[in-house]
Length: 292
View 1 (cartoon, rainbow, N blue to C red):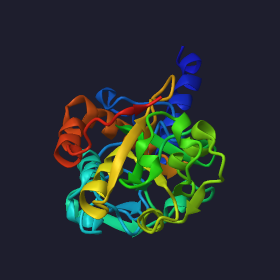
View 2 (view 1 turned 180 degrees about the vertical axis):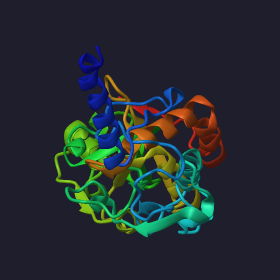
View 3 (view 1 turned 30 degrees about the vertical axis):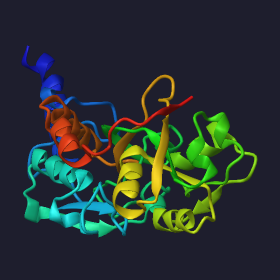
């Protein structure tokens, strides 16, 4: 009888040893909203995350760090929607504010193929199937709408539909879904201007090098309200059919942290934290006419 049970004992012990060797196989708490991802068996208990620097959480974002996502070009101050979201996620994962380390990560580098030096990046990066080939994403933390900004004196300011934009010169930042909306939806007669940073796109708008630029809606309202008052939000594009466009936190393609970070985002959405932060930092992003 004892011999019959012996292989089962060995198997159980072997599994336990293997789990220990792989730095934790504890299941993630059910209320965290686990999702299938690489490393889904990793422990999400505070202090047990396999972060870039033990005991620290390294968060990447671009520089300049634009409002209203950040404030005063200083991600570490906790001001601005994405800075606040990053600290809320860190807290949910068990990291105090002084344990969060910010790292400069250019926008396009965040979701380019290759190993990452951050634990997650936050920089208005939309989740897409194409980008998932190179990186992993958390659950979405913000539903995005793209919008058109034009000088009030521009012919683009009179646009009431997508068709009205086909004859104007448009611009957007490289690698963004804003640019995708121009090329895939508007399909303008003139090739769009592409800029390395939104700062360059805004300068082109001011000087009349382009008739209009496409950015996400909160950024559009900030540009017209604080940076280029002679411009206005012409309108927003209708949501794409199916799943809404969402910003997600970016992680290394094989990161064991992905289910933990997704769980934190899910918890913050469920308890109303994300809605509260959106109201606090993005309240100026009110409705704009829909360009159909």
